[in-house]
Length: 452
Image 1 (cartoon, rainbow, N blue to C red):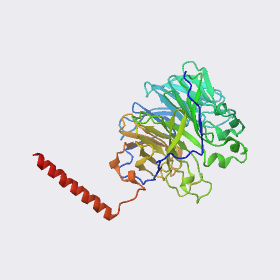
Image 2: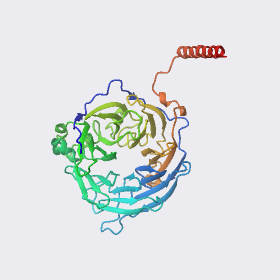
Image 3: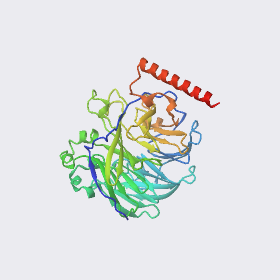
Image 4: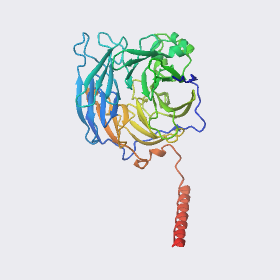
């Protein structure tokens, strides 16, 4: 296997020349839900062949999205591993899809007297999923992924917190890699500050979100020999090691750091090697600005180097603390020239990133009273989006009122937020533009008359 060059780009990286801070737009006229369906406990959502696969806390559900105006539950599986001595499996917050294989895991956090396991299902018939593999571990499962017959687990064991690669057919562990292998100084840091929060694998590259240790791209094309490619955004491990178990709260919940999820731009027709990083962070004072919340950054990795191109700031909130109205970044989708983001009660947003240095908001929708979005994903057809709202803050039982919403794929004509935050032309300038347009129209008419 060809080993790629390893280079760590620290958290003090500067935005590339010409990069922009994307403005915050208002809700877009014409961009609103097409339909919804209740899935109690809904968390992470992924889509394949117009079917949504929803990790649902006590199990999972499959949802027919082929008619976006009428999403319908196909299968609802709960009470998983009922015969396990500590069963059933609980705290199922994440699931990923690879063809007709769907993987889930739980619990999402360290718990006692419950199974710690990842389960893989055959979903060739999404209305009747069949269990293929139960892989028990000594660590919990907040997030995971599956690609080409390999299960990729976030092995947060309180030690090295490794990426763990497992063969789906046999359950055999194939290989491991940890940020501690690349930078041993992280071994001295309290382990939650360097947890492997999320892994997203695409085309043999694992995008590993190591919280304050940054985002690492790891070559897993040979899962028996994971090899680091590049690390970005990592903070100073020596400084991080000064935080003890009792005083790490602000370092864990606040910026800088908090690399929560990362994903490459998939099926992109131009300028490859792009990926996005989402932060999940809060302020500690109510009067702090929204810029103290987690954002989404766009990066490029080329030849062992990393460069930050742009930063999309979070929507406003009346209270940016964990006790307030959450509008920090959460999960997202990055497909072709568009970035689809979710912001809890800050709603869902869509950015055109044809120019990754200048992401341009083309649509947004927000209802902070009744929704709190976990993720938004683009449908296979490219004609709709689906988003999971994991709780209705106004309901008596918020998480039992979780819903899957569908939205139309927005166009630039759906509203004005594509230009939100940009300077509005003066009336004089607008009249000048109109005069130039009139002159151009007369010139075109004259030219057409000459051609007759």
